[in-house]
Image (cartoon, rainbow, N blue to C red):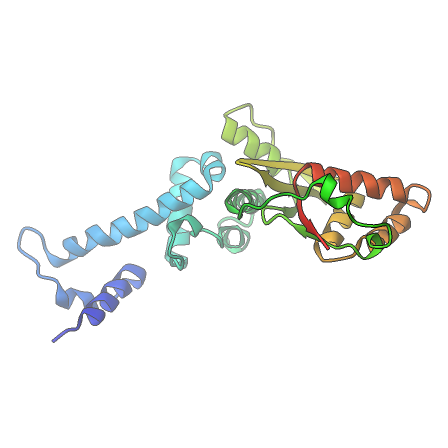
Length: 258
């Protein structure tokens, strides 16, 4: 006699791998045979995952025509099971999939666009936190500043991209004129974050990108100033450090200091 767990396991194996063991638990008729009954569920499962991909990567779906995106979804669903309780998180491996699958490696802009969209989704979904204020930061004494380290909002993300995917994404999501895809010799650095319910992004100058990355890795403020001294000299570093920190506070990127 089959147990409930056994039937559930066989059904899952059918949905994920097409195993036929579950057919022994299903009663068919001449009008609706077993294969047809199971196919309803198998098709619905794959269709729901494809819908999740389209919801999580709307710009990519728009860039590809309907048939090409359906083919991409079919390839991805066949290769990747849904491993999360929420279907919202399905598709996290799509950027890597696009960068490695032979059908898509000749169009690397697709992988970068998927990486951008997934990062934007994560930025929007990140946990809320109260940003640090200038007044709170002013309470630290001058002797504390060299060892001051910052805690960052969970929405803050960094990307280095060689394709102009932020501009492509913006045009595709706003249905505006689409720029031609272009590639740069060196990766351009981007910062993404959220304030309230609005997601923002901007490009980063090289010096700010290095300082921001170091700060997020836990460097104290004194070492950040040393980094800026190496970058631009002792005369300009203090003003630049103050400018960067003020901008990060104004944008709500920092939620704590200690």
